[in-house]
Image (cartoon, rainbow, N blue to C red; front, side):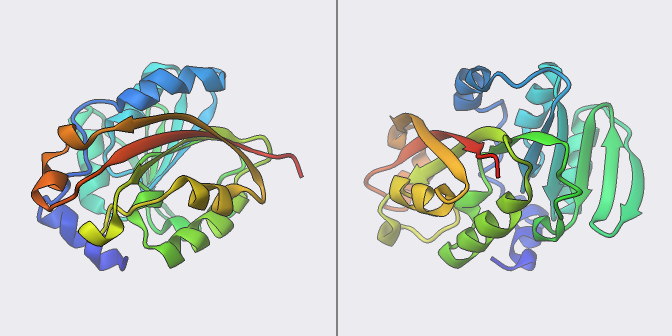
Length: 220
C-alpha cells in the first residue's frame, strides 16, 4: 500500500483496525516469551495501539514506527504524555516515559536502530501489506532485528476473494515460508472470530480466523 493510503485512513478516521483495549491474544500469550522487564519491544506500523501502553505496564520499553502524525500524536495525548521531539535520518522521534515512536518509514530503519530490541510484536503490520510488500517487509526489516529476538505475530485468515484487503489473508504456510529461513515459528492458537467481526460479515466474508505465532530469531 502507498503511504498516502494510510495517511488518508487516519485523516478520515477509517481506523477499524484500532482497538479500544489491549489485544486478548497478546495478554494470554506474551508471558510465555519470558521477556525480561526493562527489555525493548519493537512494534512496527504501531498506530496508536493500546498494546504499547500494556507493554509499559509490564515494565517494558517500546520502540514503535508509524507513518501517520495523527496516530503518533494521539497516542501520546490520549495517554497523558508530553513527548520530547527530535529529528534523525529515520524520521521524527517522539520520546516519553519508556516510549519512543518514530514517525517515518519502517523500511528505512537499519540494524543499528533496532539493535537493542530483544522482542517484537506484530498484530497489524504483516496483515496490512499486500503479498509483494509482505515478502520485502519480512526479508528486509525483520532481518535487521538482533539474534535471539523473540515475539508474537498475529494474523487473519479468510477467503481473500470475498474481501479486498487490507487487512489481508495471511495463511500459516505463508508465515512459515516468509519467516522460516531465519526464524523459528510455532503456532500457539487459532480462533474462529467471524461472529465478533460484523464488518467482515457485512462485506460477505464467510469464514474468519485469527492465529497467533511465537517467533524467535535464530543465532547467526
